[in-house]
Image (cartoon, rainbow, N blue to C red; front, side):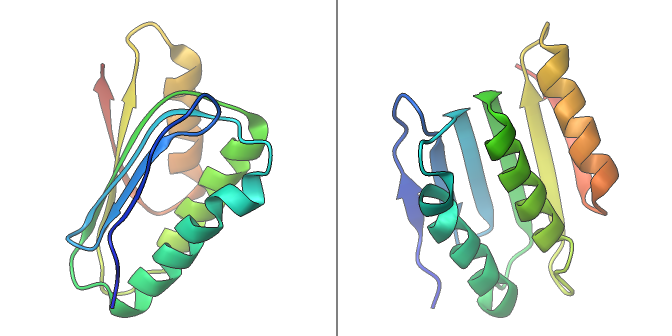
Length: 122
C-alpha cells in the first residue's frame, strides 16, 4: 500500500508532497548537502507508484532555485515516470514571470521525456 509522504521544507530542501490520490508537489529550493539520501524516499515512492498506483499523476513543480545535482535528480524522476504504462503523468511547471532560467529548465526536461508539460507563470 502506498503511503502519503510529506516532507517539510528547510533552507536547503524543498517541500515535497507525494499523495497516492495522484497529486505530487515539489516547491521551494533544492540544494541538499546529501542529495541521494534526501531524495531516496522520493524515488522509492515513485517506484512503488508504478506498481501500486491507481490514479493518473499530476506533478506540480514550483521551484524557485535548484542546483545542478537537483536538476539531475529531476531528470531521473521524469525519465522514470516516462516508463509508466497505464498511468498518465502530467507535469505542471510553475515559474516566476521574469525567470527565464526556471522556464527553460522545464522546456529542457520536457524535451528529454515523453511527459506532458503545462507551464504557468506565478
